[in-house]
Amino acid sequence: MTVEYDVPPSVTGKLTCGSLREGNAGEGVRLQGWVNRRRDLGGLIFVDLRDRYGTTQVVFNPQTAPEAHAAASDLRNEFVVRVHGTVRLRPAGTENPKMATGGIEVEATGVEVLNEAKTPPFYVNEEVEVDENLRLQYRYLDLRRAGMQHNVILRHRLVKRIRDFLDEQGFVEVETPLLIKSTPEGARDFLVPSSGMPGTFYALPQSPQQLKQLLMVAGFDRYFQIARCFRDEAQRADRQPEFTQLDLEMSFVEQEDVMGLIEALYVELTRSFSQKRFRELPFPRLTYREAMERFGSDRPDLRFGLELQDVSGALTETTFKAFAGVLEAGGQVKAVVAPGCATYSRREIDALTEIAKRAGAKGLATLALDANGLRSPIAKFLSEEEQAALTAGIGASPGDLVLVVADQPAVVAKALSALRDELGQRLGLTDPNEMAYCWVYEFPLLEWDEEGERWDATHNPFSGYLEEDHDLLETDPGAVRAKQYDLVGNGNELGGGSVRLHRRVDQERVFGLMGYAREDLQDRFGALLDALEYGAPPHGGIAMGIDRFVMLLADEENIRQVIAFPKNQRGIDVMFAAPAPVDTSQLAELGLTLVPALNRGDTGGAG
Image (cartoon, rainbow, N blue to C red; front, side, top):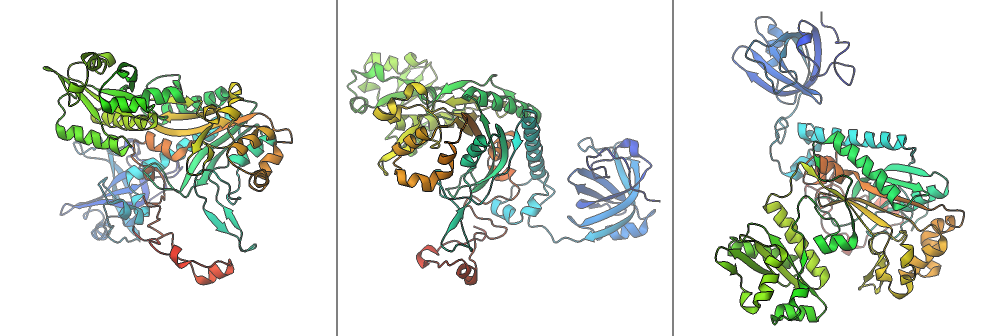
């Protein structure tokens, strides 16, 4: 008689295709799942039955179960079936050590086809390369693949651990609204028209920033949320129009309190959900200025060196016009040493030059140190002292290639940072089994917006600033350092936060520097500004990207691999063909009319 297996080694409490082991031999079982593979050997038929817990081999023998064998002849990949049978040890020599269930098989006594399946558009039972748009169109099939299921389950377990960790630290999870008022937060809002108040709109939140600050005023001194956020902006490998972040806020804290909490959390998460080694503990802390000077980036990959070196001081008397002109205009000359690259061909150097140009540089100077000495197109324009400063003076040795960019500081930083990242990949310096975290802090509070002719927040307008920089708000706003901090991992910004402005007068002052008229502030930020007058405590927090972090732990190249139902690289949902037109009757109900010039182009589809 076939019986349900009562106490399997399974998280579900029920028998699964990954549960059976040698100790179950002789037991009658019932398994349900998908046909992963069928093999007809001319007598015996073998079917690998799969669910998300694993795979079990099922044997159909025409001698012992002719009806089941006949039914198995019609099975195909991805059929959903229920199998009855008896567990037995596999014959000696046929065990499969690569499978957790590889020591046993189920001899079938019966099989029911619960649902047939069309031939899938791509292999589900193999990890093969498939066009991404095809995978996203049939995402429900793509999610059956082992790699995708691993990523989704990894994400689930990581989020659960975050919740447990923060609960133990006294945090309260609070959900905040998804329909809010449109406020300026750096990207375009997704707008939702109101049928009850025609001509007005909700916005989907880019973050719960103001809401979590209001919770601090409300006395919830430790808040967190696994928050859904929405930004209508250009897409890239680590960005989606809708994404998930760990959002948290704490009262009566300084930045070290927030950074210390997140550091402890990320050490635990990394150790629990990956085999990656830590480059350094505790996480290094770099000021924004130091990060830009040494690496040209506020999200440096610290798995390797190749630091930027300023050689401007050694070139103050140079007659080489390309360098002299830049220095006279207030620019700088910096270099990176590429170890072992002196033999690079013209084609390879041209490729590096193109990277520098794409980053804004006018060109790239190179100096190669080989067995015959210095080889460089610019050597004849440099004195011996200047040549030495650009080679041995910055640690270059025979066999190395020196890359030099001369321009304004922002361009030099961007170009050499791009070259540094490229060399890190080319030279195999970015060990995928290593995790190099660091904190970058003391960002500029404000940056000048040339187009808008006003100051703008470098991160968000709610960040506090260092008390010693208070007077600079009037004399040199761009020099004011924010109480802002970002966590970086392997060259990726994983999240950022700040200690906030908690007095209305200070918040209004920063808004004023950003060009907001006083009469506009109440309309845009009235709820928060009013709340700051009712005993708002000092507070600070952070927002950490869940998608990007899981992507790193799963060793994936883009976040679409760790999101169950993502948009493609153009922001299109190819499975539901969205965005898409809506009925004119729906628009009429909302009092909306489409302007033809704005209703052209791609409205969905495979993309």
